[in-house]
Every structure is written in structure tokens, then in C-alpha cells.
Amino acid sequence: MTEQNDQPIRGILSINKPKGLTSMMVCRVVKGRLKSGGAPKKVKVGHGGTLDPLASGVLVVLIGKATKQQDRIMGTKKAYRAVVDLAHTSESCDMEFEPIPSEIEREPSLEEVRAACDRFVGDVEQVPPMYSAVWVDGKRAYHLARDGIEVELKSRTIRIDSIEIVDYKWPMLEIDIKCGKGTYIRSLARDIGVELGVGGMLASLVRTEVGDFVLDDAMELDDVPSPLDPWDLPTDGLL
Image (cartoon, rainbow, N blue to C red; front, side, top):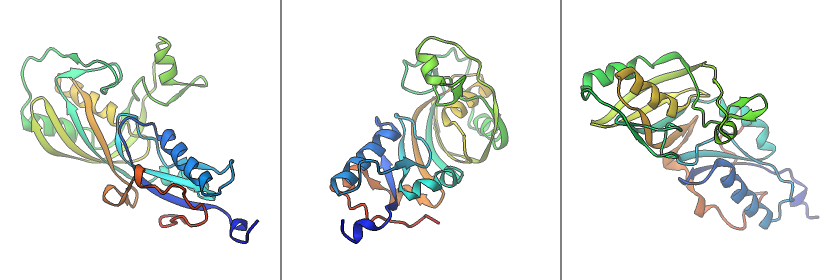
């Protein structure tokens, strides 16, 4: 074994996760490229906060000894750009399931939409979507949902620092959200709709920030080198 290979593996990658892949799929791609670069088969690769398959954006991938900082990265502030469809709902609160048209008495005004968004800024109670990774009696909620088992998920306190309206043309509402750990943007889309008495589901979602990691600096998954040198990884953002 060379002197270089005696060194511990430690690194961090900020990747623009493509829509359609799970966060763990991205980790498996990175792990495969590390192994092709000489890393041991058991090299650890994790991430600093799950992104839903239908979402894209910043996914912080932690490698080797850097995986010990997972909780710290997950605890940092997040930012998202979301498009909410106020004319439809869905079982998953996003486009995973067929959108269901809502009965709309009238289209809410921009002022009403802004007031509804403002009600969800601060420390708020939020119920996760049924199709989520929340643990229920030792199983993920989405596994129970796909098995047709109905469970009542408990609300929990989350922090939303700001919701800014980027654009509103009925029925689409585009918003920028800054929030803390554990916030489900799908639930926020649902709840804004409930507040307005209309529909509410995610049409699209991009995570633009995780702590100091921003989308403009994130690398595309296809640009991650293959092979990837496990002893020459970026460490910016690690303690």
C-alpha cells in the first residue's frame, strides 16, 4: 500500500441532484467512482439532507470520515425555489401521483396569497406528508402508504424564516423559502392551499442552498470525475 493510501479518506461534494434520482442513488454513483479511483469497497458515502426524487438542487455528499459531520450539515439552514399548483392536490402533495382538480369558488388575490404565506413564517406546526421518510413504528411512512396502510402522522415544530413571492399567475405560485431542518416543502404547499381554501401541491422544487453551499457552485453529477481520487477530495465546508 502506498503512503498516499495510508491517509484517511475525507471529503465533501456539493452536487446539483438531477430530478428523478433519489439522494441515495447519487451517493451510490459517487461511491462507485471513488472505488474506481482506488477507494476500499466499504468507503462511507452519505448526504447532508434528503431531497425528494422529483426535486433537484443542492445535495451535500459526505465522504469517508466527513460522514461524521452529517448531523451538523443537516442542521444548517436551507433555501428552496418552489412552484405551487393552487388548482390541484395529490396524494403525495407533489407530481408523484396524478393531480386531482380542486373545486375553486374564486381565485385568491395576490394580497390574499401573500397574507397566507406570511402565516407560515416563524415557528410553526407542520404535519409531514404521508409519502415521506418519517419513521412510524419502525417503518418509513412512504412504505406504509404504498402498502395501503393509513396512519396519522403527528405534527412537529419547524422553523420557516421567510417566504418570498417570486411570481403569481393563477394557479401557479412561485416562492422562495428559507427554513430550518425538517421542513417539508410539500406540506407547506398543501397548507398554503388549505389556508386559501383552494388546492395546493408542488409542481416543482429546487433546493438552492444548504448552509454555505449554494446552487451556483454545485457540480453536475455527470461532471463528478470517474475515476474519483479518494485522497484528493474537496474539504471546504468541513470542520
